[in-house]
Amino acid sequence: MNAADMVQGNLALKLEAPATPAFTVVKGGRSHFQAVATKPVRTQRASVASAPVALKASTIVAVAVAFTLFFVLATSVFSARHAAYADSVANVTYETVRVQSGDSLWSLAQEHPIDGLSTQETSDMIRSVNHLDRSSLDAGAVLKVPARS
Image (spheres, rainbow, N blue to C red):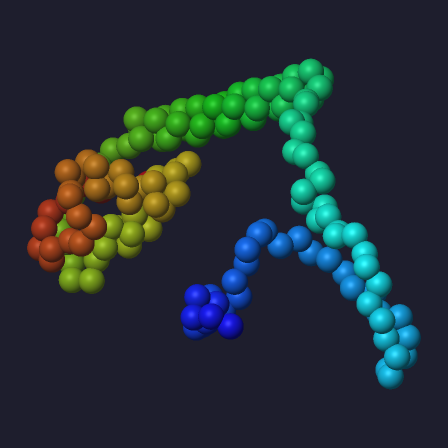
C-alpha cells in the first residue's frame, strides 16, 4: 500500500472509474459458498428517458373555458359588492361625536352601523371620512360618524 492510497475521512474510498451497482450471487450454505459472476444491474433512472407531455386540444380548450368562467364570475361578484358599497355610502348622513377614552374605530363602527356594510367596511369608511392615518384614536377628538338610524 502506498501513501497515495491512504486517505482519511469520507475520502477513504478511492474510485478509479464510476461504479455501477452489481449483485454477487452466493451459492451454498453457511460453510460452502462460491461467488457466481453476474452482469452489472442498470438502474431504472438510466433507462427511462423523459418524454415531453403532449396535451390534447380539447384539454387546452377546457382549461381556457374554466379560467374564463372563473374570471367572469369573480368580476361580477366584485362589481356587485362594489355597487352595494357605493350605494350604501352615498346615502349616509353624518353626525359628530367626541371620542371617549377606550373608543376605537371598531367600537364606533359597531355603535353607528350602515345598512349593507360590515363593521370592517364601516370602520374603514369612518377612517377615510376623517382622514385618519392610524387606527388609534385620541380621547377628546371630534370625528364624523354615520348618523344612527
